[in-house]
Length: 319
Image (cartoon, rainbow, N blue to C red; front, side, top):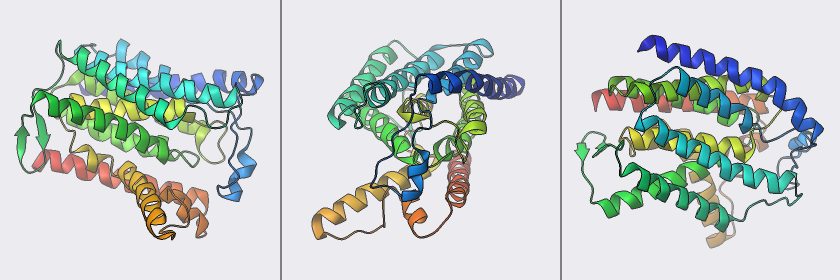
């Protein structure tokens, strides 16, 4: 099992890096460059025109090793459904922005509806098998939920994770680097739960993110775009759902939670009092505006993500 895990991670790294060499020049020729909003940090304005839709690099890095090096089962195909389906939603948003030149892409309602529908499709497909019968509650144990409440939990977790990871993708290398330890933690959980095929998927996710980082770390040669950030969110949500660790994701993916909460807090406080808690949200922009260099913010947030992922793994083992 361990050999297949390591082979998946290394293969995903190579496939992702090799894909970048081909995809980046192609996107440049199409002039699929990122537009930068003026109300963001001024340092970001120089990034305008950098190719986006880099999620197209991550996709083959995950799909090929997961299908060829593991033994694909219901878990893997359900994970692929959320991974590829989420990437498709992100791709539609990116395409509207960069090809049709509509800066806002899909509306918030369109995104939420598409995400909720994908979660429903996932639930319908999972009815035929592949889903754990119970969910794991840290320090409590296994808990069975009525089907209606479980369906609501799945939709909430899926939509929330996609948008939390999307919010985390705001600096060069941040979302990809933060996802590496999350994927590693879930690979370990799959190993302990004897879900080998899903563990190969998790390792491929981490390897693909690492390969993408070769071209995405500051100064980025390509951005992942919503194609990538939503794909990562879909993959992480799938790992939580298929291992029955929905509540544990709050800890393992703690960085995503912090980033999302910073936006919710900022909006809620501003609407109620007209004041801002942070100089800018999501939280990574706050640290930029207080004077931290972008690389310092990114590396420290990676460390926070690693600490959260490791803490979640310890809770799974000893809780």
